[in-house]
Each structure stands twice: as C-alpha cells, then as structure tokens.
Image (tube, rainbow, N blue to C red):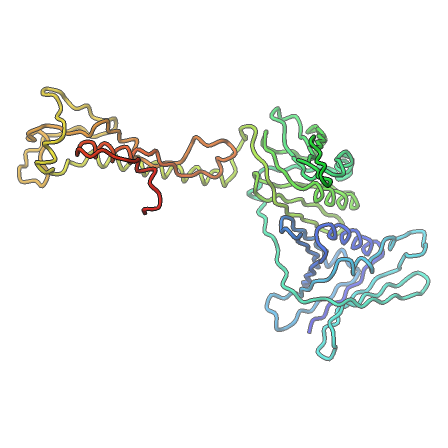
Length: 434
C-alpha cells in the first residue's frame, strides 16, 4: 500500500498545467514517479529520440508533500502512467488568477487511492474554488516501470546559455513547415546561427522544389555563456526546440544547452522555484571546420589508434632483427641473388649486423651463406602493417576504421610469380571462400 498526498497553491497548479502542455507535444502519455523528496513527470516520444523529465521538489514546490512507499518495493518509489489529456482536463488554464475570476482556485489537493479493498487504483484530485465549490476528479492510472535517460555533462564540452525570452523571439522567425534546426558556431568565433529548414514539402503530387530556410545570426554577447567549437553543426527537431523554449519562457529563466559532438545526445536544462526541467534529444550534424578541442570520445579513439600503430610498427622491427630461417635448396635455387660485392643497407632503427660463427646454430649464418642475401622482389616492410585509416574526413574521424593496404595480396602474387604460377585473379577480389 502506497501513501501519496500533496497540496498545490494556485500558482504551482498553474505551473503543472504549463508543463503538461509541454509534455503533450512529446507524447500522449505521461509517466509519474514519486519519491520521498521529489515528484517527477517524464515523457518519451514515439520515435524514442526525445526524452523529457520535469522534477518538482517536495519541500519547495508543494505546500504539503507526504510519501510513504510500498514496503514490498526496495527502490522506494511509486511509478505509474496516465493519459496527458486526462490530466490537462483537470489542470486547466487560468487556475491562478489574482483577480479572482471564474476558474481560479484557492488550493489543489492530490491523493493516490491504492488499497486492497478498492476495485480500481485512482488519482484523486480536488480543486477548491474561491466560491466554496469543490471539484473532485478521479483518474485511473496504470502501474508501469519508469525508465530515465542518462546524460553525462562532464563529457559535454560544448555548452551555451541564453534567456528564454530572447530565444522565443528568434523562434518566431522559423517557418511553420520547417522540420529541422541547425545550430552552429561561426568559424570566426563571433556568434552562432540558428537555421531552420526543410528538405522538401509534398502536397499530393506537388513538391516544393525550393526548400524553406530561415537563418538567425546571434552575437556571442547575447549569450550568458557561449563555449562551442567553431564549425560544429548540431541538428535537432524544430518542433521539440519550440516546445522547450515556449515552456522555459513561462518560467522566465535561462535555457542551457550541453552537447559533445554530432550524433551524440544534447540536453537542454532550466528551472526555477523548485521546478527542474531536463530534455535529452538525439542529434545529427557534422563538422565544417577544425574543432578547437577534442572530446573524450575522440581522445580515446586517438589513443587506441596510437597504441595500435605502435604494436604494428614494432612487429616488423622484431622480424628484421631475427636471423633468417633455413630454406630448402630448391627454394634457394629459384630466387635472385644480390650482385657480388654489394652490401645490404640496414633499414632505419634496425640493430647493427654482427658476425655469427656458430655453425651448430639452427639458422644459417649470413656471412657463411653461399648465396649471401636473399630478398623478395619489391618487398617493403611498411606495406604489411594494418593501421587506422587517417585519410577519412573530419566528420568521420570519431569513428575510425581499419584499412587493409592490399600489400599482402601483392606479395602473394609476387611469390606465385617466383614459383612460375601466374595468378588468374587478385586475392583481394575473392569473396566468400573464408
């Protein structure tokens, strides 16, 4: 059995109405999570690309807050889900009206009916109006498991903040039919650009050939804080951005953005008077200029690339320092010899050669070998290494891949030519055999 009772003043009840209007633009259902110290509304859109969490502080936002969790639940919380429209029908507009006109209330009390002797679990909401009228609403809820999106702000090195009132003026310039919003900083570092656009609009058989594009340039002095890599483009949904800015403007607070790089989540955060709002959105985008600083994800990839290249480069050195193995006479007779009197040039970094007079060794000493030095035709040690593909574009640098130079196939062809067998096809073109 769960005990949940809280009371709201008229101004706080109006704030609940505003946040429900915002959440309704993301999802038709809203999830509720109650804990001892806070009460949270969450919503996840159908494509699972936008997550919203609005937390009400139990000590500052409510005039009274009491929560006793079920003894059988170890995490100490109560979770459920309800239709957003059902809550909006209760928390209507103009709940807080200082003039005392119709629709204003004096207080709002909410309790949860969760008892074994009851036929249904319900949210009971009572609105106490100024004229002595009490309106009671009983809403059915569904017990669900509420999940939260995780976001690490320590990784988000790009961030900016601006007053919500200024941002609301900027979004009024965006077209009603635009779909995407591109936020990027100029390469000169003097400001940012908010560009809304759509690729095409289809109306039956008619297609708008010229996409709608609206760009708003903002100087860095208009931001409370601005720290973004030049040339970094972050693309999000215009609809989501408008819903967030409109709700932030109801609190008259500053909107903060945190993100690391394209295709990684972006989080908007703001709050006031015991209400904390966080929106986590998936992004797309690209780099059009060299970033000023690498993100931790890029640094880890770069360190892995260095360690991989080091391991690959050390292997040929060890092979060069190892004495050559004994070769069959038939194999030696088919290979070219070095001209008499010529000397072998040691590769850079190799150890100096020393005379080896041990005739009982398993390896033939170089100085005593009858044909002196044998080298494969056009052999190059550096072609045998596998390393990170450094030729990728800047926007692909965060996701490096291994690249095969194809020299192994070339070497196999060379060896086949030495044996007198002409290849019929490149080894790199053979697929499906292994």
